Length: 514
View 1 (cartoon, helix red, strand yellow):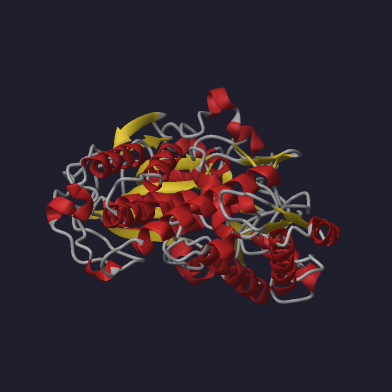
View 2: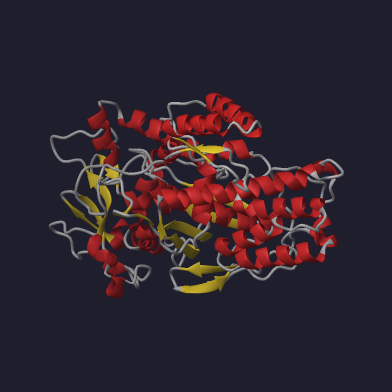
């Protein structure tokens, strides 16, 4: 595969806090080490070299919109957003697609079972189209709450004609028909399953057998509606009325929107085992490219709770709204995701989430303190002012090295903590350097306040105003040395579920017990 040389121009992307234009010398990513990314296809770190000079084209496998997304699903989009932000500050014009699967995905990775959309619609007594619209809107709301920059969100159903044409173009050499539809013969492409390392990892064993398949790992390109049945979502095709197989949409939509080949394909690690090998096979068969379709394939690991891998199949899972209802800010979950490397398993716990919210609040308060010390409005600060302070510049360089090393956000966060803890550094340097770092991390440090990050569950029986009034009365009692009254007020707050945090260095007057 021939790759074009990396674009040398590093134009600074700016968002959030508005700063004066920076010179090229003052840009965060000036003279950076190469951006190294782990390619699941080769199981090795590789330098990012764009296939189109100055551009980065990224495709992320999106949700099947038949239900709410759990927080494990959302980890994949925090990861993809962090990747996109890193590419942006490296100077690349980003094109990012997250597809919306509203047809074709079965209840497992097998080529048997019900379409998830049809099943959800039947259970709810609604149309599949209504189900898709509702859950797509909820997914997009979660993206916004996690401060994930909005990518393109094409729906699979808008590309069915292109899917049919794609299947027609590869049918003669790569497919065969069964009563249940058109199947892809994986023996017709080289190295099928090499992404999953199926011969050693056992990933392809997740594809269930279907009578008549030539090879156990062959998969459906088109699923013909059985005689006597009618789907809500079905189309006429050369193989009978029916619906496309799940794997087909990503090949077709990535080619239509990004072109083949494109730069980076991302998804959860479970996609590495079945969905993405099938997608690669389709790309190879189609002939638009002589490789996998993407130069680099990247996969985030699972979010684990104490009952095992988070999954919707059990019917019990945590949504982002669940965290909000328990009193947590969505960006505390984003910080929790960033605190571990995207290729590592991340264990979820309420204690861990509370620690993330506490850390985020510490960052917000330190950033606010620096803002309060500014001698001029933030908009008038030169964008490269952090270069005046050697210690600040050194921290920025460490931050850049961390995120350029396969998105090592855990180390990058440590650097941000160190920056915000500086005592004898010009506040404008701290503010601008923190802003530059936050362009990658997406924590909205300049827009959050400490009161946004109080932990108060939706189920709490006492409101914030009542808590503040009781605390004010308690402070007055303590100043008057009326400790009996102070203790009584404290006991009343505890009985209402409020933990009073006397002497907390973060300035948390209270939090509601979770």
